[in-house]
Image 1 (cartoon, rainbow, N blue to C red):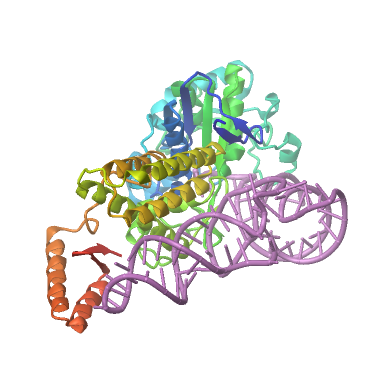
Image 2: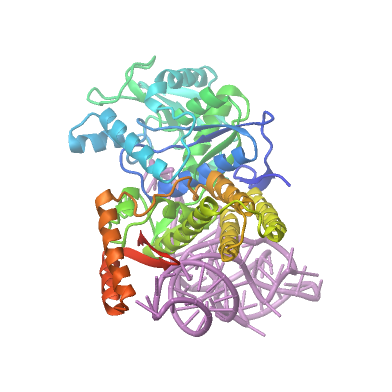
Length: 496
RNA sequence: GGCGGCGUAGCCAAGUGGCCUAAGGCGACGGUUUGCAAAACCGUUAUUCGUGAGUUCAAAUCUCACCGCCGCCUCCA
């Protein structure tokens, strides 16, 4: 059975069949770059990273497009508020584009740390103003939009299928009194395609309707079409953008081109922090950099980026995920366990002399790897059930550790296990990496030397049966976050 | 007010009619190992899935009611 994905458009798990055999176009709503990436970004982009990685594992040639929003999203009401980038820029007295540049770099650095593959194309909204103006022109020509006083609005009632994604009817929306009515709009549900800019507005461009800037839904329609075509395979984004953002994208694109927009709509769920909604305007969000360094009052320690990744994979992308210090701690422990096993396995492969001494275990290993692959693919095929996929990796961890107790294994038996870890845990899930730092992360030689010195001292004490002295050394190092482990013939250390 | 979702062990979390006397991880406890630890391995840790009623041969999974939590409807991944 092949890959099935939950399609928000059909409200069903549909068999995934690409439009063009062997090729898949994926568009994911990217970040608005006016602040550091937070836990919500982690869940969202790890989830879609897994989609892309798994599609590639299945052999598809994937084009992954993720935009960078550097203009156009406003602070409060869709058509009345300020540009968020402008607000952030004013605070530090910089040009909005400088803010966009700063946080774009910050975003990629955090996503790299989470081991997300880079999208193939990361188009900027500000770099596609011309195309956005073109699309507005088409919508005006076709009678789906109207111009008022230098601004252009999309007339929602002209698009019969408006609401098909979010399941809202126009009647419902009309009854909702919370939509602030702009006096320029014919109907409250109409949305801006192009907004007239006041003279002091920093971000503005010339257009047939005067100086202005694009509406907040337009960029995704334009850039997905430019790089993936008018109809493409998968559009992903956060659940909170299902309405109105994605609904408006569909309306604009299908009205303009008369062909279906995205075939599959995937929505990932939200994160909470200690059970509370995390929102940019609520000021309770935790940045990824704070998690990686441990510098947030809600955190008792720092956590590895890949532990955060593992916590995301521990639940399903369509389930909400609650971040808490305890949950992060658990994910870190689990991540460390997998890492230690893979390290141990690789070390054994390196040090094992290549003689076939215990080939009767080869069948056992082969069976295990086969069932691992089968269970893993079954889980991922079922709407990317990473929680089960992760449990399959843990079963392989358990199997491997038990196997490694046998000292008579040949290299040939161990190599396929390592390859399986690298493929499923590495290529697909992204939590097994090619190179692990030898000891503590980022430690310089000085620390290495110092710890080795203490280990030597302790070894001398132990030789003399001075266990109190030996324990004192270990305790002091433990206090500094350095763990000693006595292995046969050597003592190794790592950071907590 | 309208729309949608969730409530599973100490914690995170999968499962959505029979394979469930409910994956997996963390934690805790016991054992093997160790000078003692750590790591690893073995074992224990929900007879029960918010509460109550119903449908069914069969329910964590379907229906209804109630309680609690959350999201969207306004920028947000």
